[in-house]
Image 1 (tube, helix red, strand yellow):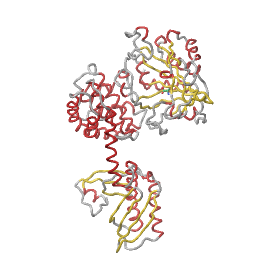
Image 2: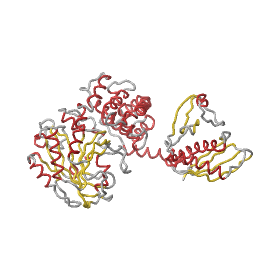
Image 3: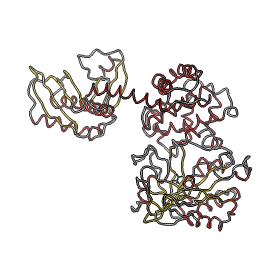
Image 4: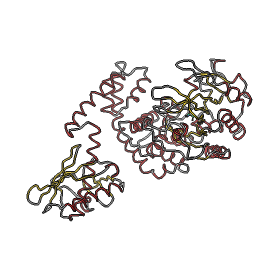
Length: 586
Ligand code: SER
């Protein structure tokens, strides 16, 4: 059975049992304390806490997830960064017995997975720091359904207690279904049981029984209503259903692996791990970019950069040629376009971002690797060297660590962080000097005012006439200042009209478009240039719909709605035919 069918069967199964099918939410969660959506329950978090669900008490979904926690594991037969999680949820409706029965029925009756291959784990209970009792009920239900006690194992908090995501939220004991891929114990013999890391078992389905609420202080209290949150990775399920021994051989990955094989001189058999890392990460990158994330040095953008650069590094090991990621990204789009149309509609962005990052990193990778070899020859990698690799050659610290690990060397991560902080202090001081503000925040504030300046100029030209010309401009994080040619003082009515027009454009939430073109072409197309400036042959042009178009070096914000409210605080004369406006964003 192919993955599309498995996905559909799952959703239908639960629909027929009174669950409403809810579409996947974005990979960027609304909860600001977490970077990515890592579980299906996230979009339903408040329903577990008692808020009435807008979808009813039973829902089911197939959720896009991105997990950074497993990046290091990627390359084995089952861990991934991007995955789809199938889930069914009950908010104060059925509980342990219902959830376990559904799970068993779906796996054994619908998908015809052999019951003998299913092994179970349950929560064994703890006494400290507070008592959480052992989950006897689940154990009993499993036995009634025909799983012998010899295939049921008890684990503690680490393995069989889930949540919360972020700072606080619902959580509770779990029971997990593990699938026995090989039927053979590793050298641990009888100790080769679920959670053994030999690859024999794969955790297939996690059933979470949300009975508790964990506060930001990590204290547990009982929830008013009990809930069920289950999650099963579609890729793993596809592997089991299709009788494969790794997720990469099943149909959500096989086409990508095949595509790499086409362009590599080294076979998958020989270098499976490198193949798998590339295949997993390219998928992750496609989905992250489709959600509007761009490579950067912070937060989500950093994760994207890290996986893109790792792809390039592993591509080198496989002798892949320049821009090899492009056909792979196209394969990912092909696989998912019907289920997640955003990967198709954002195709141009996706391919451009990947190509740019690849070209940028390729330039420094080669040199950086040479430097790495040199410092590695001396032994463990110092913080300063790791920072140098990061700062000059764009090596994410994790990449340096990975390279070091391959040589059985260590990296002084603490020293790296110290060097990083020192560097940040220096650039922040520079930034403050420029804007009189506080680093990154100041930069963003300046970008907003910069965009506001463009809107202001366009509005002045529309209200006062096309003879208005920019004569000067100055921005600090508190305000913008704009000097322009105009023969007389503006009336109150004119000021109001200009203000209103700028605010209207802000409300329209317009996209700020950035293009590069020849200077002549820019002028011909109507872009405004500031006469005092000398321009290079190729210039950057920022346009906001057909309202504003200027040659400008930036930076600007992405959309006008980011500006908030625009207000002119002063209009004054500077001499014959010259006026000055000071304005702020509230
Ligand atoms: N929230 C649980 C998990 O992510 C079950 O959905 O594993």
